[in-house]
Amino acid sequence: AIALAGIIVNDSLVLVSAMNRRLKNGETFTDALMHAGTSRFRPVLLTSLTTIAGLGPLVFLRGHQAQFLSPMAISVAYGLLFGTLLTLLMMPAMLSIVNKIKVLLISIIKRRPVSREEVEPAVKEELFLKKQSN
Image (cartoon, rainbow, N blue to C red):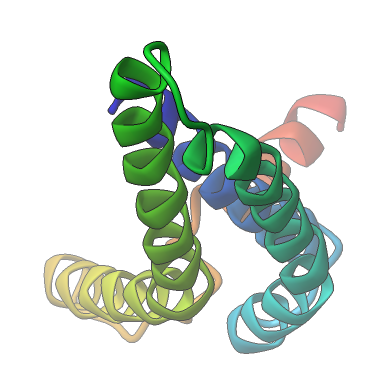
C-alpha cells in the first residue's frame, strides 16, 4: 500500500507541477490544466505501465516464494492501473472543481469577482516574487 501510494502521489505531482509551471508563465487556468493533462499523459501512463510490466514476472512466479510475493505484486499492479486512471481522468476534474469553489469563496469574502488564476498558489507566489524584486 505504501509503494502504491507513493507512485500515485508522484504521478499526481507531475501533473500539478506541469500545471503550476504553465500558470506561472501566464496561461489561463483552463489552458494550463488542459495542456498539463495532455503533455503529461504519456509520461505518467508509460511510467505506470513499465512498473506494471516489471511486476509481471512476480505475478506469474510459481513456487514457495511466490506464495508471499505474488499477491503483493498483483495488488500493486491492479492498484497502480486503477490509480493511474484516476490520476489522469479524475485529477484534472477535481482540480477544476476545487478551483471553482475557491473562486466562489474568495469572491464572497472579497466582495468582488476574482479570476480563476488569482486564487491559485502558483500565481500568488509569482506575483509575490515580482513585488519583492521591484
